[in-house]
Amino acid sequence: MFPGLKLPHVHLVPAREDRHIIKAVIAEFTGLFFLQLAAPTLTKAALPTALAFAAVMYFTQHLSGGHLNPSVTLAATISGHVDRFRCIYYLLGQILGAIMGALVMVSLTPGARVGKEWTGVCFEPPTIGSGRVFGWELAMSLLFISGVE
Image 1 (tube, one colour):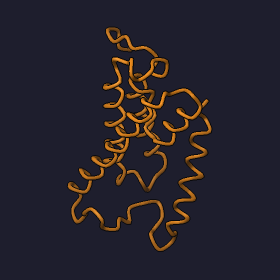
Image 2 (tube, rainbow, N blue to C red):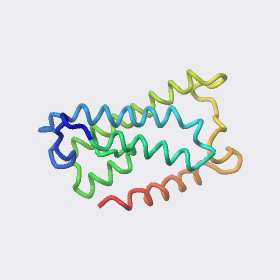
Image 3 (cartoon, rainbow, N blue to C red):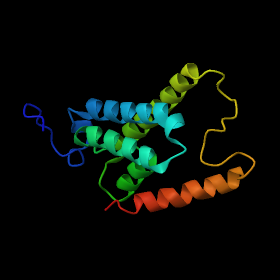
């Protein structure tokens, strides 16, 4: 795909010895940044969300493995596919990318501000409480990481 770019498999080289770790962390950061930035326009329909995630994963897989989710990074670390330093770097990149994407999204959305309740999500706030949201997130994360070998 990129003839001049010769990268080792991202999970075989320990992070401390990997010359490309910065590129991998930037890929995770930008992937989560763009997914978070696009989230308000994608939350009402599953197919566009899945296609956006697949596209971002496709573009980041050769640099970072396309984790794009702290649950996947933690599962890969626990299963021994990723060393703990790469895990820490990826988690920092993912969390900071999501925060920056959310801040840019809030600055570009009329009437939005940090801390204001946002109703453009899958469930309206009065319909489902935070305990149930946590339960759904936990269940879906476990389902999502079940594919990590």
